[in-house]
Length: 183
Image (cartoon, rainbow, N blue to C red; front, side):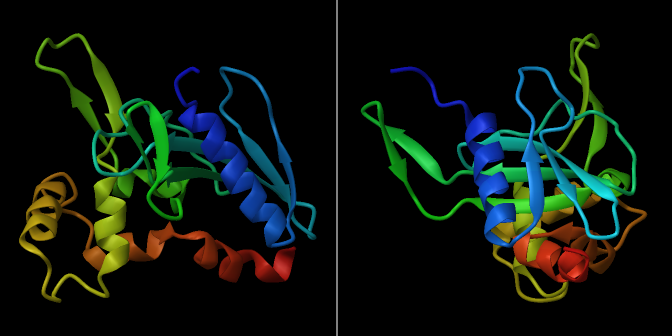
């Protein structure tokens, strides 16, 4: 048995959620593609999605994101909520899913260069999505760990406020509320 293909599992999970909500959606297949899923809206416009998956959001970062910008292109970040125990996959809950329009990715992502000055990328620590969506505003009492993570994140994002970022990050329900009338 091989390693879990988290991107493929995430793509099919998100695709199933779109169908479950009644969207006319299409999945693309292939290894190196920038568009994983398309949705045709009733007004004829096409939304495209680049799905990025991980086993969970508890470790690691999204390091090499493309810098695509379009009103109709979205990044979907999915934590599958799984772990491995003795080579067995354990489900720890429903997948976490956050959707960000590609025009708004700069609110959470940043350019980085490794200490070797050779490796570069554009990405972010996915835990920030969970923290921002978890709280109603920045002033509520946060756990120490969440406050520390938010403060380190804000070092990169000094020009944006908490609510501006929060309103740009959607979960599946937010996406449905935004596009429901255009199915």
